[in-house]
Image (cartoon, rainbow, N blue to C red; front, side, top):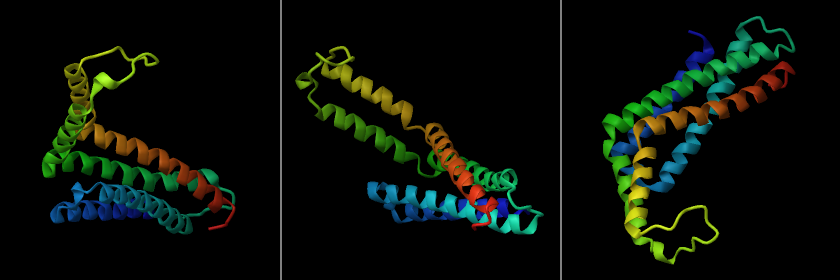
Length: 180
């Protein structure tokens, strides 16, 4: 197995383990812990790309200045990590912790019900004036669109892929200059 694929899978397995651990202990409901989990996933992506690139580029014939080869190796680790994590997120929110997203929808609806729309100034707004019931219905419809397992896994995949491309560009540049 290529080192870039191996490190991508190891990073994804570490992210799976942390998510399952948080679910078992019930800490996945705490917003701050969720934020730290996002940062931890970004760190794991960074480490998977770095070590995958470093280990594999040392084993293949890598002439100095081969930016394209270094970028390809880093992207392999990036895509294995990202696709694995996106698939895990889809399965996790669909089958393991299926109540989490419904709780997010309910929380958003409660916040919409607590907000007094009659005090909102619609003069300089592009939004048409609406009643409280219309506002709550709009917020519920919006929440039901964004709090789905498919949406979360897609956004995680897109976000991690974009960050991974930036990391790959950076590390490939440094590796092609023999700095790392």
